[in-house]
Length: 482
Ligand code: NAD
Image (cartoon, rainbow, N blue to C red; front, side, top):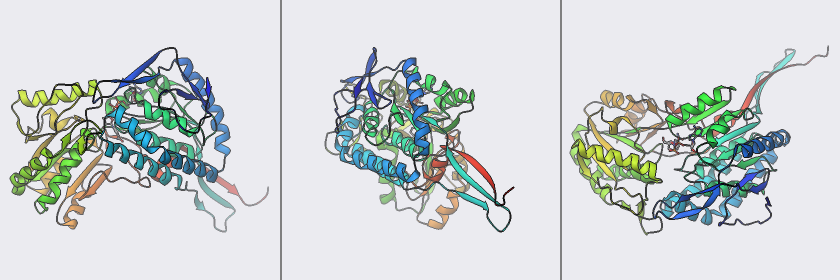
């Protein structure tokens, strides 16, 4: 075991962080750079024994941390944010190398991560007075920490989504164990290593591992809560496992976000934004635009502008200038997304932009638009989580709302219109946790984020996100002596 003494991070070795110490395992594995296929450094493959030790440390640490004043916990989080900001270039470099995202977006993820730490640190946990008049009692509702939480993170935004779990967990007085995705473990481990300078041992820990690790964590009796971000398929397994000991769950799952483009938009302004919002992060975003519905009156003109904007988006390695789309993050996902391209070709759907699946090295795919595939095709119904999107038409706003809501998902949606009144009215009819007008993908650490239907359970961030790491406790306090 190595003690964590160095103030700056060593970006050559990657360790678990358990009870304030860097530890490794007999077995190791490694991720790859998805743009080149080159191996990244080795990372630990945690064992069941590591899980036991981390749980024990978390349980002990959570007892003391829960009694630390809220203001002290806020200060620790703010100091952590400053440290992350100071290290953000090194984190961005590693993020580009392990995740594949273009450097400009890697930097953006780091900026957002710092903003999220600060924004969540500044939130106040509510204390609600239900009754405090002249009667003989006061009724207060307060929120107490749950104890130990587990945060399970996917590979598309490995730093931001880890931060979005650490911040609310620790500021409300919990300990948290982070499990990064095996595809992107590097920045996540360093993020937790960095945290050791600001939180007592055991409060923030990280375990890297293989496919066994997630189920070991979710089935362990110690955690009171699992905060999971990932696919709907895995989210259901997490919930099933958590149900054995009635753990609280927050599930941030898949999406199939629609954009409804009204007939009165400024096409030249809106089409490039829609293209970017479909293909940002190579479409590997839960709230990327995954269905584009355009009013039939402007369909052809809008399609032409969308194709033009899409063809301008450059695909390449993270450090090449002006790159907008990096590679697909991993081989499994690449093969899955390629399946959509192959199906579209086999079915002879009308591919109006992209469609190429270049051969390696690197898991690159070109941004692809498919003109009006059948509404029951896999591309319209499922979440490809890659740079391929169906362009669809509608003839009335009622139809547009019905089409937009015709999905098992309900994460995000946007309405684009020259009439804000019309757009705002349509927005209220959408079944989704996040609805935007004339924008998409705008987020805020003060605002709750979550999905309807099979896009998830509960919300993260905002005051609701804080409360989700707490038990609600109602106090009936007498004013008179007995
Ligand atoms: P995934 O479900 O395959 O994996 C997510 C995490 O769960 C990884 O850390 C993985 O190792 C772990 N895991 C796998 N099996 C597990 C199990 N049985 N028990 C516990 N943990 C397990 O998802 P992914 O491919 O990494 O991410 C892509 C998906 O995530 C997409 O569907 C996307 O829409 C969704 N996503 C949702 C949000 C959101 O906030 N709603 C954000 C980002 C991504």
